[in-house]
Image 1 (spheres, helix red, strand yellow):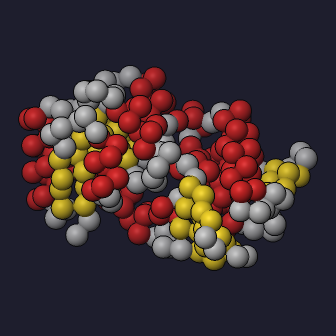
Image 2 (cartoon, rainbow, N blue to C red):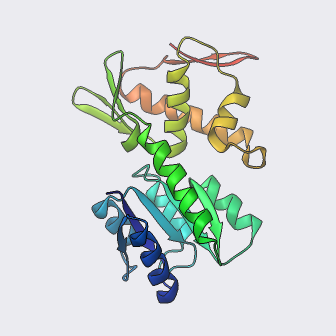
Length: 220
Protein backbone atom coordinates (compact mmCIF):
# COMPACT_ATOMS: atom_id res chain seq x y z
CA UNK A 1 0.00 0.00 0.00
CA UNK A 2 1.42 3.36 -1.01
CA UNK A 3 1.97 5.91 1.74
CA UNK A 4 0.95 9.56 1.45
CA UNK A 5 2.02 12.22 3.93
CA UNK A 6 -0.27 15.22 4.50
CA UNK A 7 1.32 18.45 5.74
CA UNK A 8 -1.63 20.78 6.32
CA UNK A 9 -2.29 22.95 9.39
CA UNK A 10 -6.03 23.41 8.75
CA UNK A 11 -7.52 20.56 10.79
CA UNK A 12 -10.72 20.35 8.75
CA UNK A 13 -8.86 20.22 5.42
CA UNK A 14 -6.37 17.75 6.86
CA UNK A 15 -9.08 15.37 8.05
CA UNK A 16 -10.96 15.72 4.77
CA UNK A 17 -7.83 14.82 2.80
CA UNK A 18 -7.06 11.95 5.15
CA UNK A 19 -10.54 10.44 4.76
CA UNK A 20 -10.45 10.85 0.97
CA UNK A 21 -7.10 9.09 0.67
CA UNK A 22 -7.90 6.28 3.11
CA UNK A 23 -11.09 5.58 1.16
CA UNK A 24 -8.94 5.43 -1.97
CA UNK A 25 -6.80 2.66 -0.43
CA UNK A 26 -3.74 4.72 0.49
CA UNK A 27 -1.85 4.51 3.76
CA UNK A 28 -2.04 8.02 5.20
CA UNK A 29 0.12 9.89 7.70
CA UNK A 30 -0.75 13.47 8.70
CA UNK A 31 1.58 15.83 10.56
CA UNK A 32 0.11 17.74 13.49
CA UNK A 33 3.41 19.23 14.69
CA UNK A 34 5.33 21.32 12.15
CA UNK A 35 8.45 22.26 14.10
CA UNK A 36 10.66 19.64 12.47
CA UNK A 37 8.76 18.96 9.28
CA UNK A 38 11.81 18.14 7.14
CA UNK A 39 13.13 15.54 9.59
CA UNK A 40 9.66 14.01 9.88
CA UNK A 41 9.29 13.71 6.11
CA UNK A 42 12.64 11.94 5.80
CA UNK A 43 11.85 9.61 8.72
CA UNK A 44 8.39 8.71 7.43
CA UNK A 45 9.72 8.29 3.87
CA UNK A 46 6.33 8.49 2.11
CA UNK A 47 5.66 7.72 -1.53
CA UNK A 48 4.17 11.21 -1.98
CA UNK A 49 3.68 14.41 0.04
CA UNK A 50 0.68 16.75 -0.07
CA UNK A 51 2.17 20.01 1.15
CA UNK A 52 0.30 23.20 2.03
CA UNK A 53 2.16 26.45 1.36
CA UNK A 54 0.95 28.20 4.52
CA UNK A 55 2.20 26.06 7.39
CA UNK A 56 3.74 27.29 10.67
CA UNK A 57 7.46 27.76 11.35
CA UNK A 58 8.71 27.19 7.80
CA UNK A 59 6.40 27.90 4.86
CA UNK A 60 5.73 25.13 2.39
CA UNK A 61 7.88 26.58 -0.38
CA UNK A 62 10.95 26.85 1.86
CA UNK A 63 10.29 23.36 3.24
CA UNK A 64 10.10 22.03 -0.33
CA UNK A 65 13.31 23.81 -1.24
CA UNK A 66 15.10 22.20 1.72
CA UNK A 67 13.56 18.79 1.01
CA UNK A 68 14.90 18.82 -2.54
CA UNK A 69 18.43 19.02 -1.15
CA UNK A 70 17.83 15.69 0.59
CA UNK A 71 15.23 13.74 -1.35
CA UNK A 72 13.33 13.32 -4.62
CA UNK A 73 10.04 12.34 -2.92
CA UNK A 74 7.14 13.51 -5.14
CA UNK A 75 5.38 16.60 -3.79
CA UNK A 76 2.04 18.15 -4.70
CA UNK A 77 1.60 21.68 -3.36
CA UNK A 78 -1.86 22.39 -1.95
CA UNK A 79 -2.84 25.99 -1.29
CA UNK A 80 -5.82 28.30 -1.00
CA UNK A 81 -3.99 30.94 -3.01
CA UNK A 82 -4.93 31.19 -6.66
CA UNK A 83 -1.67 32.97 -7.32
CA UNK A 84 0.50 32.42 -10.38
CA UNK A 85 3.64 33.54 -8.53
CA UNK A 86 3.16 30.81 -5.90
CA UNK A 87 2.68 28.24 -8.64
CA UNK A 88 5.86 29.30 -10.45
CA UNK A 89 7.88 29.34 -7.23
CA UNK A 90 6.58 25.92 -6.18
CA UNK A 91 7.47 24.36 -9.51
CA UNK A 92 10.88 26.03 -9.57
CA UNK A 93 11.61 24.67 -6.08
CA UNK A 94 10.83 21.15 -7.28
CA UNK A 95 7.10 20.50 -6.83
CA UNK A 96 5.74 17.74 -9.05
CA UNK A 97 2.30 19.33 -9.27
CA UNK A 98 0.18 22.10 -7.81
CA UNK A 99 -3.49 22.27 -6.85
CA UNK A 100 -5.55 25.06 -5.27
CA UNK A 101 -8.25 24.86 -2.61
CA UNK A 102 -11.09 24.22 -2.78
CA UNK A 103 -9.77 21.28 -4.80
CA UNK A 104 -11.77 18.80 -6.84
CA UNK A 105 -11.30 15.40 -5.10
CA UNK A 106 -11.45 13.47 -8.37
CA UNK A 107 -8.81 15.68 -10.01
CA UNK A 108 -6.57 15.46 -6.93
CA UNK A 109 -6.78 11.65 -6.94
CA UNK A 110 -6.03 11.55 -10.67
CA UNK A 111 -2.96 13.73 -10.20
CA UNK A 112 -1.74 11.63 -7.27
CA UNK A 113 -2.30 8.46 -9.30
CA UNK A 114 -0.43 9.86 -12.31
CA UNK A 115 2.62 10.81 -10.25
CA UNK A 116 2.74 7.49 -8.40
CA UNK A 117 2.36 5.57 -11.67
CA UNK A 118 5.26 7.54 -13.13
CA UNK A 119 7.38 6.74 -10.08
CA UNK A 120 6.50 3.03 -10.41
CA UNK A 121 8.02 3.10 -13.89
CA UNK A 122 11.33 4.41 -12.57
CA UNK A 123 13.81 1.55 -12.00
CA UNK A 124 15.29 1.07 -8.55
CA UNK A 125 18.83 1.24 -9.91
CA UNK A 126 20.75 1.67 -13.16
CA UNK A 127 24.36 0.69 -13.82
CA UNK A 128 26.48 2.96 -16.03
CA UNK A 129 30.24 2.48 -16.34
CA UNK A 130 31.28 1.84 -12.71
CA UNK A 131 28.44 3.93 -11.31
CA UNK A 132 25.24 2.75 -9.65
CA UNK A 133 22.42 5.26 -10.12
CA UNK A 134 19.37 5.23 -7.85
CA UNK A 135 16.79 7.51 -9.53
CA UNK A 136 14.20 7.20 -6.75
CA UNK A 137 16.73 8.43 -4.18
CA UNK A 138 18.47 10.84 -6.59
CA UNK A 139 21.69 9.11 -5.60
CA UNK A 140 24.80 8.03 -7.53
CA UNK A 141 27.35 5.66 -6.01
CA UNK A 142 30.86 4.65 -7.00
CA UNK A 143 32.27 2.04 -4.64
CA UNK A 144 32.35 3.72 -1.21
CA UNK A 145 31.64 7.22 -2.56
CA UNK A 146 28.22 8.68 -3.22
CA UNK A 147 26.67 11.95 -4.33
CA UNK A 148 23.12 13.20 -3.84
CA UNK A 149 21.50 15.09 -6.69
CA UNK A 150 18.73 17.63 -6.57
CA UNK A 151 15.52 16.75 -8.38
CA UNK A 152 16.46 18.86 -11.41
CA UNK A 153 19.99 17.43 -11.54
CA UNK A 154 18.54 13.92 -11.46
CA UNK A 155 16.12 14.71 -14.28
CA UNK A 156 18.95 16.13 -16.40
CA UNK A 157 21.26 13.18 -15.72
CA UNK A 158 18.50 10.62 -16.36
CA UNK A 159 17.57 12.24 -19.66
CA UNK A 160 21.19 12.37 -20.79
CA UNK A 161 21.62 8.75 -19.70
CA UNK A 162 18.54 7.65 -21.65
CA UNK A 163 20.05 9.36 -24.70
CA UNK A 164 23.69 8.51 -23.99
CA UNK A 165 26.13 9.04 -26.84
CA UNK A 166 23.56 11.27 -28.53
CA UNK A 167 23.46 15.07 -28.50
CA UNK A 168 20.62 16.48 -26.39
CA UNK A 169 19.62 20.08 -27.00
CA UNK A 170 19.07 22.64 -24.26
CA UNK A 171 15.44 22.95 -25.36
CA UNK A 172 14.93 19.21 -24.87
CA UNK A 173 16.35 19.39 -21.36
CA UNK A 174 14.25 22.42 -20.40
CA UNK A 175 11.11 20.73 -21.72
CA UNK A 176 11.97 17.60 -19.74
CA UNK A 177 12.58 19.67 -16.61
CA UNK A 178 9.55 21.88 -16.54
CA UNK A 179 7.28 20.34 -19.18
CA UNK A 180 5.83 23.79 -19.74
CA UNK A 181 7.34 26.80 -21.52
CA UNK A 182 6.14 29.03 -18.69
CA UNK A 183 8.79 27.59 -16.35
CA UNK A 184 11.75 27.59 -18.74
CA UNK A 185 14.76 29.52 -17.52
CA UNK A 186 17.93 29.27 -19.56
CA UNK A 187 20.19 30.50 -16.76
CA UNK A 188 18.74 27.93 -14.35
CA UNK A 189 19.59 25.13 -16.78
CA UNK A 190 23.19 26.36 -17.05
CA UNK A 191 23.49 26.41 -13.25
CA UNK A 192 22.06 22.90 -12.91
CA UNK A 193 24.40 21.50 -15.58
CA UNK A 194 27.38 23.13 -13.85
CA UNK A 195 26.40 21.71 -10.45
CA UNK A 196 25.84 18.27 -11.93
CA UNK A 197 29.29 18.33 -13.51
CA UNK A 198 30.85 19.38 -10.21
CA UNK A 199 29.21 16.45 -8.44
CA UNK A 200 30.28 13.96 -11.10
CA UNK A 201 33.84 15.27 -10.75
CA UNK A 202 33.70 14.18 -7.10
CA UNK A 203 33.32 10.61 -8.43
CA UNK A 204 36.23 11.02 -10.82
CA UNK A 205 34.28 11.93 -13.95
CA UNK A 206 35.29 15.42 -14.99
CA UNK A 207 34.43 14.92 -18.66
CA UNK A 208 31.28 12.77 -18.58
CA UNK A 209 29.02 15.58 -19.85
CA UNK A 210 30.47 17.23 -22.92
CA UNK A 211 29.21 20.51 -24.38
CA UNK A 212 28.68 20.55 -28.13
CA UNK A 213 28.70 24.23 -29.08
CA UNK A 214 25.47 25.36 -30.68
CA UNK A 215 23.97 21.89 -30.31
CA UNK A 216 23.65 20.91 -26.65
CA UNK A 217 25.18 18.22 -24.43
CA UNK A 218 26.21 14.61 -24.73
CA UNK A 219 26.80 12.00 -22.01
CA UNK A 220 29.95 10.04 -22.84
